[in-house]
Length: 95
Image 1 (tube, rainbow, N blue to C red):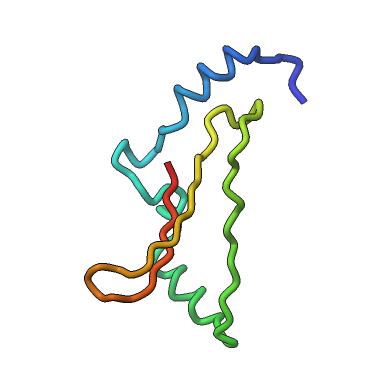
Image 2 (cartoon, helix red, strand yellow):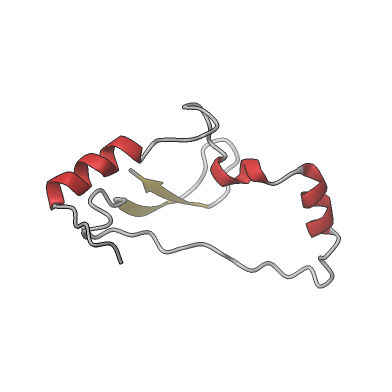
């Protein structure tokens, strides 16, 4: 632990300053995936032998806490059919 503590206002200012920073530029949407080379993707794909998918998804944090002052707001709604295909669809929007 550090001996230096941030006030809530200082933490918020720091959070606002770094929340959209990316070493790959402001238009980057891949984030840490930029560290994975095509060779590594092929090597990982060769390790697949059962074909079972496992979710690594993290829960959506929706409560304001000290280390997450700007949490996601999630809403889920079921719409009956997709207009173009007529297929059932579940839409989840994150704002």
